[in-house]
Image (spheres, rainbow, N blue to C red):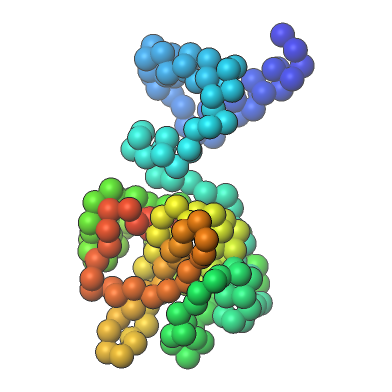
Length: 203
């Protein structure tokens, strides 16, 4: 066995410990044959083509994203500029959305996907059940700047911030396609489609 494999084996052991893998769960992993399938896919180079978001969704897991750093020393305008968006809602202003926080805060966001239409109230209640809190506008902007490609796949909503615009409660979201990225506001009361992801963090 090579030194490289031994080093990776140590990493796998540490990862299993970090994830809280029990003896029973380990038996399930081996007996179902899924572990062998993953090894085989890695050997033939198939894993590089696997969409991790879709894979986690298939397993019924919350989509995890890379860590982000929310820099509260920046103004809201600077946070928006850092995201390099092609289109920004003109109502996303410091007067309507106050940024609260100090210094630089590192966070590990999660994208929660329900797969069908949900109202904002139901989403917030479900996040609470899972021990999660909704992301804020500042966190959404940090996420957009760090992981710009995600919003080109699906809409990402931050229910942790809202403002009254023309008598309606509005909340920020990221959207886009292959050619542009958008920072906009949606109606809290309208609800959200099945393709939406909700930015959230562990309490």
